[in-house]
Image (cartoon, rainbow, N blue to C red; front, side):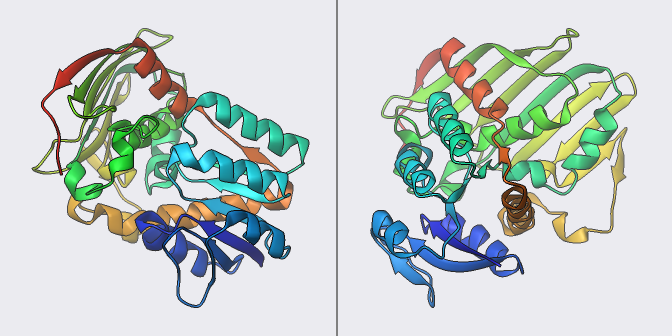
Length: 320
């Protein structure tokens, strides 16, 4: 078993990381780092440097903080010869991610930039089906209620907090994985509340090497049925991924497998993310065994390009 430290003991860590770690025979949760949070029965540190100095038995660190403050902890962990796993979004900027990758390479360490939505139940099936198809049209529809999923989380509205791209990047992580050809942003419209720094909604248009039409709509103001869907119209028919990648339809027929536990309704969406996180920790373990780096920045690049190219529209103030 590998001794692991978990940093940033908030909702995501408690609901998804901890169950994934505890359910695996590959990992032992040996310590936590957080300003306030803790896990009963696990050594808790409030000083990250002290944790690294005093715990030579810990080989790896999983960082669950928001992207902007996470960088200093990732650098410290790599400088102290620890393998590092990064919660999504990978970082606040592409430059800092490339810095971390270079540090990991220089120190022969594992660095894992996670995209949990790529581990959703039917994503691999969608990738396999699309592999030899010609894309004609792609549309992403990612709409949810920010008060429901990010209630009171002020950091997401601050510079480096991503706003609606925090969930939107999940969709982009799936699309950049399942499409046989890359897409690139050609235009974007960002709707930013007058009292916030990051967008509450975004509409993106993409280019495609074979001239397929590709668009995305992200919105944090959806108070009805939550929607996390990707539609890909191809020369062999229509593929639809629903509920964040947990359900797959091809030409109207639902593709089913034996892993029923991953099939969800939008009301229960967050309850099954543990399946995705268990697969992430399986991947992290494999990377450490082989001293490999998995640092795919394609989803983050699309977000960065949308911000660079996007026009900004000021909309009404947002308050929790």
